[in-house]
Image (cartoon, rainbow, N blue to C red; front, side):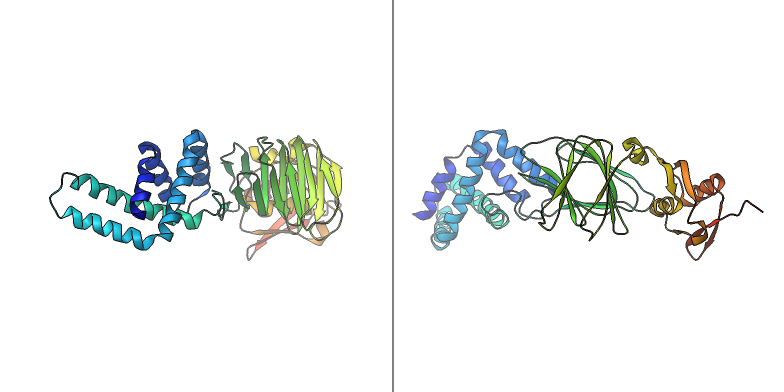
Length: 337
């Protein structure tokens, strides 16, 4: 009978491997997260028999689907036979119970896994920080990510690629090289491709800033237009979303990464740029009075409460600050009087 044929196929599988395959089928039939997919792939590659066992279980389910009527009759026969005295009553009933449970699990995963691709349809993992918060993240591939305040990224690690989307804010990456799984960051209208390097990406107010400390980063236009540029150590790309071109300038990469250790370093930067940074460290909006537009700052600010950082800045520059209705305004001070 068709049902007996399928049962025989299962019995030929190693018992331990068989149950492991069923366990994985159940685990990934719900709403698996990134760690589930990676652990499943690791199990598949742990022993040559695992992938074959899983594929056989899936094949059995497809056979089951085609022969559902015959299988239902077979299981009914087993239940009827179990009511009569028989030396094989317990083993047969136990086999029927396992078959039903295993096939339910395999049925669920057959819908989830298309073409035996364990990453098919996987949802990205979201990481976010509140303003003033910093967060260190170790991805499953060994890559280290540090998120600055008010930032959000979506992470999708797949079999043949690793993809990050920076929706807002700032993130620093220390990427582990993997030739078989390229690493890319989508940010606005640009795509960054990396080969085992360290770089910082900032997206704020329509501006994209990419600073490389180690290795190389290739920058491409995300909409398929021709042209790309490469950034090496100490290079920074400045780009406004929607613009065709980008500006590349030399910088101190260590200064760009200083926020990870609680410092902001400036070398003759406009006050407006400092204010933009302060906006990521508190809920108040920091703005610059047009009369203070020519003020520039060189120095170091320790990352702290936003109001404390503003007071420290005012002590270092010829400016004053006022606060009203959630807005902090930086005013210029006339020292000639």
